[in-house]
Length: 69
Image (cartoon, rainbow, N blue to C red; front, side, top):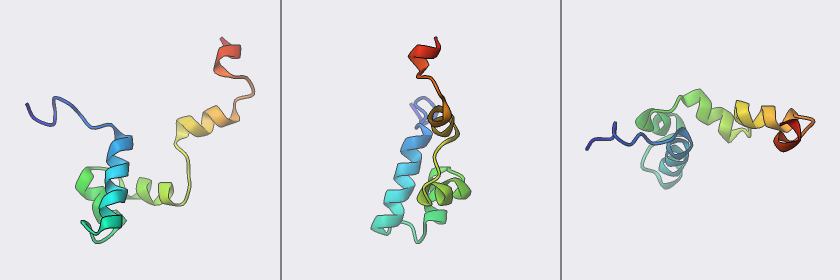
């Protein structure tokens, strides 16, 4: 069984890249992002505090999902 059988979710890969940069496994966050297969720009935006598109859309909703249904 290879890694293709059980793909790693993007959130986990993002966290892996952050940890690699913090502990020094990778020289920078950009290099760590490339090593785990995450876009470097995504990692830079996450570090600056930008939310995911889904989270930002949920934040702007006037009704809770249950109320909307």
